[in-house]
Length: 382
Image 1 (cartoon, rainbow, N blue to C red):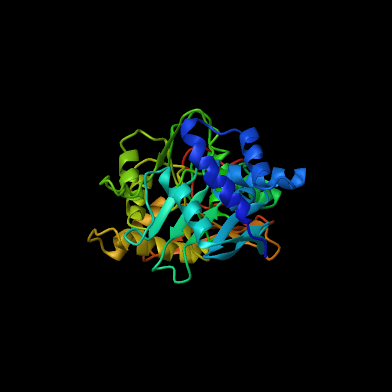
Image 2 (tube, rainbow, N blue to C red; image 1 turned 90 degrees about the vertical axis):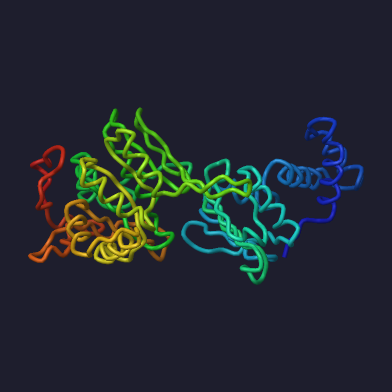
């Protein structure tokens, strides 16, 4: 198990002691390292300088992990070795953190946003400067020590055909252009946001698109994109701004389309009402294991909105609002794939049913309901 040597800590303290006189450059840090141990080889001196700079400017020992494009998640489970997800698989790294290093990591993450993580605020969500999402759980809730989960920001947007075959890709691109309202569902880590980002690459240029997220991750190519991000309550008294607040605000911003990163509460009802009032072609995600489960979950989330609506009324809104449900899954080899594309169809009692249109590689059927904006191509055949 590798740990940062004590020399890193000593040099870091000396840098902090002299930083009051101005920024400390790399050459000055190198001199401090050589003063601590004049016999160190040049390559070890360079490694120590890199780690000390990561302590000063970055997030400490895990900074190299955040620079690795193959890593999608960094998992700190209290003092001990750090785990990562690399290419869809969990891997234990050689980097080990003690309590001091974790406290430094947490402080670097939350202090930039004016937040704090301690016994009074033991659960914190934050967005890092590069767009990555960080989730912190402190003691006493985290029994074995502070836990930090960092979901890396994907710098590269994957093309849609990385998720499915050509026929299914064409169906999804046509559905986006035709103004169908699409819900992407899947389990945690299945690639919902990544697929949502891929779908958004095919939004018509020039339309006014308002995105609403907990942490701004979407990279939309259009010229008229408005990005909104929720905010937790801060220790100095600033009130929280929820996804539901932002959905309501977005409706007053004259959007052509809404893109909600994820619905997980009462904002689902506001989203449905928006989809039923002319904001065709909107997209969102939710946690669910199948298209049918996604409809049930959306029903449950709408019932959490503290509005006394009967279930039948919510179901009728769902039938009118949601056109397509796209399920994405993570395969054993780590690849993310579209496993089902389903159309929402009502039965005689206004309950939702789903009709499978496509699987990962194969187009099985054409949509039965009319497009909202433009006609599907005649050559799109199953």
